[in-house]
Length: 294
Length: 294
Image (cartoon, rainbow over all chains, first blue to last red; front, side):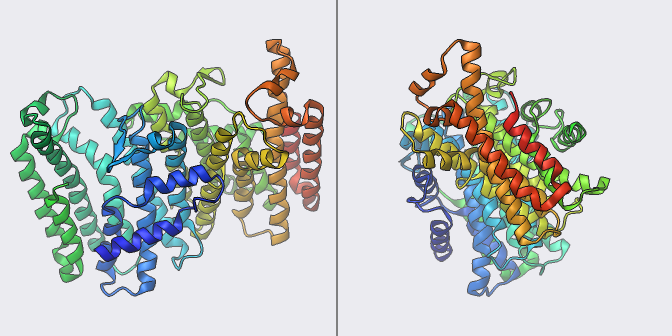
């Protein structure tokens, strides 16, 4: 996977406008927001789903996968930049670096997010790729649905509205399936759709896998938040229950949340069974998402 | 043109998510941002360019044109919502109504803009249309380029950087060709590309027309700003030269700016000559853009 991470970094470097091209400050800020950090989980999922279709991918095949992989990473990066703005989470640090609006300013951060979203669709539409128009427009549809008000942005709106509210488990699940899950699921679907080699049942299995790990990602995030709080801030886990933000830990408790993540991992693997060894990397990513410590 | 405006309003009504669909507050705010106001210049341009290709359009043909027309209006509306935010122009009124961040809040306004951008690409990618995949992906490419850092958002970044700076005419033109011009030009190109009926020379003429009216739009905006200031605020036009923002009026003076708008109008008409009567509506739109009083 380190090899894929490295090629994604190189591809993003190449696909982002150079820092010397006008408007230079905006382009430098876009690169600051995207490059040199991040686990690249979403691009890895695109590539791993592509491996299900074509296990021994040629360089040309990998280059085709780089396009949706970079597009989805642009959407993810834009969402982080906008999330960090003062009117949203008001975060000043992201992965140990000042956030974009701190390093540059709020107006540039807004435009960085807006431009990265446009760039994502521009990458998918680039006619210089070997992808045919039908595949490219199918990926535009998947990504636009996953990013917009029926997906990620919609999940954030529900998140905003939920502060101070008591959510039921189904409501919490609805929120996270949109906020985090939609884009993760889109990665799997784009990687799979890039080739006509799968039947509808196989697509449905991969989609279910994507749904499981998208939700698991958020459950584990909540668990890690609770545990790192306990360990590093000396705040007891129980105190999170008093917090204003509904999380899986707050609603289920820490142990049941961990057990739920384990269940989702098992379900994810079940959905991969039909693909045998071709889904090895997707299986490893499900494990990584649930077992990670950061 | 009133007929086209009315059908665009209906199409936007239908294409925007209903105000009762979750997340309801976000969807209501998206509708607030888009519906019931605006001159719809961009959708009119899409339709008028489509008329060049097919002068006697059937209902099916008009419905096809509605898709890029609504997509570009979503991009335009998103840019207004984000422009009005406190970290940008900090405007509280837009077309006589409170701006989205005033009527709702800043976080929702941010998500409204983000979601409208996604929706624009989702509309172009919708497979239920009669547009073939090649046409749709070509329009995604045109719109993504026009909206992103090489187009509208890039122009706004240059605009931000230019406050307090003395710009040369070429620099001012570069800024406005990006900020306002790119999206207007994209309208003409999308309307034209929706059919394969034009040759490359004809496409180039329409593109030049789009470039002229895109720039004229901004020159006239600057003239109207200066004149309404004089008339309504009792501020002399000469005082604008002391303002921090470079405009055509500040750099050229009021009369030369008016003359320049007239020249651009004449150039726009020259580019239409080859099409004869089929370009009647595009000609009228050039006249409207230059001669409008609001």
